[in-house]
Structure formats: C-alpha cells, structure tokens
Amino acid sequence: MDRRQLFTAAALGVIGATAIGSLDPAEAFAKPKWDVDPGAPDPNFVEGVVNTIADGQLFVKGSDGVFNRVQVTGATSIWKLTPTTFDKVEVGDGLYARGVRMPDGLLAAESLWVNIVNLDVHISSISKDRMALDHAGSPVMGYVVPGITATVYNGTPAISDMSLLQVGKHVQVIGAWRPGTNEIDIATVYAAV
Amino acid sequence: MVAVRGEMSWFCCGNAWGPCGSTGHGACGTCNSGSRQHAWPNASAACLSITNPAACGLSLTRRTCGFRHRTTNLCNGAAVTTSIADCGPRTRSFCGERTCCGATCASNRLIDLTPSAYSVIASLSTGLRPVSVDVG
Amino acid sequence: MRWLADLQPLVIAAWLGWSGGFKVLGRTAPLAAASSALRTLLGQRWALPAFRAVGFAELAAAIAVLVPPAWPVPAIGLSTAFLVYLGYARVAAPESSCGCTSARPSPIGWRHFTNAGFLLAISVFTLLGNGSWPGAWSVQAVPVILAEAAVIISLNGQFDRYWLMPLRRLKVRLTHPLAAATTDVIPLHATVQTLERSPAFMTVGQALRSDVIESWDEGEWRLVRYTARFQDRPASAVFAVPRGKDEPDRVKVAVVDDADSSVLFAA
Image 1 (tube, rainbow over the protein chains, first blue to last red):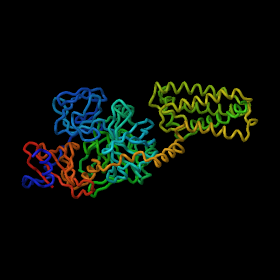
Image 2 (image 1 turned 90 degrees about the vertical axis):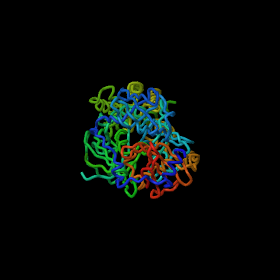
Image 3 (image 1 turned 45 degrees about the horizontal axis):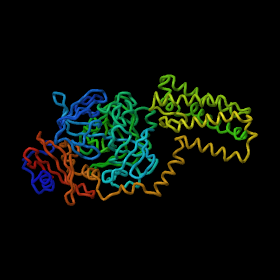
C-alpha cells in the first residue's frame, strides 16, 4: 500500500487508531509555546529573497541584509500559488518561512510560503484572464489561473465564478508574486457584494 | 478593554520583496514583516479617518504605536501577543463580512498582523480568520 | 483663432482655481503635502507651508489670467515649474503622489505630465488673444470649453470613478471576460474553508505544524495532508473533506505516525 493509499484508508476510518489509553487528545496535541517579545523579531521566522539553493537548503537574504539558512524536508509544506514541491522554488523567489531555529542558526522549516502576497486593492479593470489592480496608487496586474483562482463573496465558500467582481470595488487578493515584475497570479479574491 | 471579536488578516511591511518593496516601515516607522507586530484601525485620528470602523458599527479604543494586543484564533485557540506598528485594516471596505469556525463566527476586519505574527496562529495562505482581540 | 485664444483663460482659471483652492483650503491638503515629493525636496517641516504657498500662487495666477486684460505669464511660469517638479519627483521620489488636487494616492505618471503640458500649451496660446474673454464669449464657445474640460478631466484620476469606472463596468457586463475562469474544478481553498470550520480540525488544530502539504481526490472525498506532532512524534494529519459540499460536520481526520505508519488518532 503506498503512502497516499495508507493516508486515505486512515482518514476514511478503514484503518482504526492505535489505542492511546486514557490520554487526553488535547494534551497530546498541545502546541509548545514560543516566547517572543511583542514587537521583537521572531527567531523562528524568516523573510527574504532566495539567494542560493543547495542540498535541500535555501540561503535567504532578509530585508535587513542578513542571510538565513532554511532547511526544507518532506515534512515542510511549500506554497507557491498552490501546495507544491521543493523543485518549484527558484533563486529570486521571495518567501516567508516558519519553523524551529536550531542552535547552529539554521531554521528547520515547517511551512514555506513562496512569493505570497496579501493585497488590499481596487479593481481598475477586468479583461480576459486578468484584472488590473490598484494597490495604494501603484498598478499590479493580477492573472486569473483557471482551476486555482477562487473568489470568496462575503465570507461564503470559495467558488471559481468571478462574475460578481466589479470594476472600482475594493477587494483583498491573496496571490503569488512574479519576481521582478508588478504582476501576480491570483489564488483567492475576497470581495464584499 | 473587553475582548473584541472580529476578523484578522495579514500585511507586509519593511521595504521587503515584491509589493512590500516600497511600503516603508508603516505609520509608526518600526514595522517589519519578520517582527511580532500588528496594524490597528484606531492608531491615530488620521488612521481612524481612513479605516472608519464606525461605518461597520465597531467602536475601537484609541491605541497608539507600541501598544500590545493579544489575538486569539477562534479556530484553534492559538494566541499571539503583538505590538502596534501600523494603521489598518481598512475596516470600512468590508462591513458585514463574516468568517466562521464551527459555530463560532466573527464579523468585520479588526486587526492585521505581520506575516511573522499571523503564521504563529494560522497559515498565511488562508488570508482571513475569526479572532478575539484583547489587551496583551 | 484669436477668439479661441481669448477663451483659454476660462479653462486655465477654472483649473488653477480648483487646484489652488484644494491646496489652500482642502481638508486633506496636509495628507496630500505629506505624500508628495515636497517632503523629499524640502523636508517634513516645510512640505505643507510650501504646498499652501503653491496654492496661493495658483489662485493668484487664476485671477491674473481671468480678469481682463488676461495676463497668462504667471500661469505659463507655474505650468513650466510644475513640469520640472514632476520630472524631479519621478526621479527622486518615484513612490510619492502628485497631491495636485486631492490626497488620493497617485504616483507620478504620463497623465500628470500630459495634464501639465496641456495647461502650459493653452497658457502660451492665450498670448495670441486680445486678452479679454467676455468679448469672445458666444454659443460656439461652449463646445470648445466642454471639450477642453473633458481633456483635463480624463487626465485626472480623481474623476475616474465618474466616467472611466462606469464605462469599464459596462464593458465587463457586455463581454463577460472572466467567464472562462469558471470551471468544474472545486478550488482547494473551498475545501480548506470547510475543513477549518469542522469539529475535526478544531480537535487537532493545535497539533498541526505546517500548511497544506498535498491534497488529492478520492471519490466523493478530497484528502488534505498536513505535518503534525503527536506527543513529540513526527506525524501526518490527513483530513477527508466532502468534495464540492460545504458539510464541515462530515470531515474526518486521522493522525499517522511518520516513522511506523501507525494510526495514532482518528475522528
């Protein structure tokens, strides 16, 4: 049975759980607390641009000019418009990484968000497969990716139908920035209608 | 302050990559995406005139740069304490918008966290979560 | 030709009066001044006083060109200086706003240059007239004035919401450009929304250590996998979410040990 078949069988209840005795699930699942001062830089978080990629490690240059090493494993989630794999990460990509800082300074990444942006914008115009967006006066071109781009209207379940979006209205857009440009691929649009 | 329920999102700041390349360090001059900080809709009078939470029926206490709030994700109980570093979110543009977790729902944009702070209690790809905000 | 030149003071005075009035009396003028390149040029302390001074100069130039005999030289001087200022702002403070007639964010672009160039051109053109617009006024003057006003309005982003946005909305209504974006594929985000509202997610939420690692479809279900931690053991949390239906109560979860593939928890 391959891993996916195992996971599917487990999630659908075909394979039962190992007895865990009287252990309280809440206790088993409790997350360790990280103590970081409010306002202070978070040592378990890295932001910056990928400078080099080697042996499952990313060398990331932060906005403060400091280089960080980020270790990526099979347990690291990688988002680049959609969940993806390590081979899709490229030099020049921007990223945010959350994980655990090791004593040698390496960040063992649990989650990687590559080129992710969250923009408050006005829709300037709508064309076939794209929307021109106004981000505080700066133009951003947002590309619609059929099968991936989804819209959430008033907090309801996301759908692929974008016909209720209106030129001139304010929306929030989660997307993947295309490095070196003012263009993004749109993952989710949040709109009030 | 009584805990206020609303929605949280996230924003970038600090002259970083992509669209953050020209955002600067926020209204307080100290904002960085990698720090445990947040934006508050009533950080100043000028801020309030932009965000206008009253348009959505929200009355929020004036809190200035450096003030600490504690944000709890109503979906998983995870919490993070951050300090004010910018003005936001633009509450008036999303009046009545609702986000739910189970039977727990919250309306209106209340707080924006930096990517560092948001990712402590939720995934950046979600973009919007119901939260409870209290004094930190 | 002379009568056309004599009509220009009306347009010039209206434009300079509007612009000057905003700078001197506008409620959001301080915001406009602070976001303009004046802040880079003169520093925060002098940006607003300089902004107001330019406003007074514009009002004075408006009066000078409007009251016969029309004296367009101040308007020519201001337009020229404005073009130079725009060039400076574009280079020295490219993220700054024009701040010309509103506090709306508007990075310097071709519209601002064209607008300033148009104002300069009609100010220079005024020199060819007799200097008295009442004598040139007639019914034929109306379309000329309206056409010039339309040019100025179309170049000013502040008015886009009154004409450009409605035109674009009409175009969208007629052409449905994003129709092709609607597919049968259920967006992953819809699945995650259902999942995050489910009792199963709230039970194991604190155990999750990552965002979505992968997802795949199996019949009526979509499986979504996260990295998890169960009593310090590396694990995978796999959720089964009804595909295409918003039924959070039906979401199931299993936590599987990464080392020995045993199922540690299920709900």
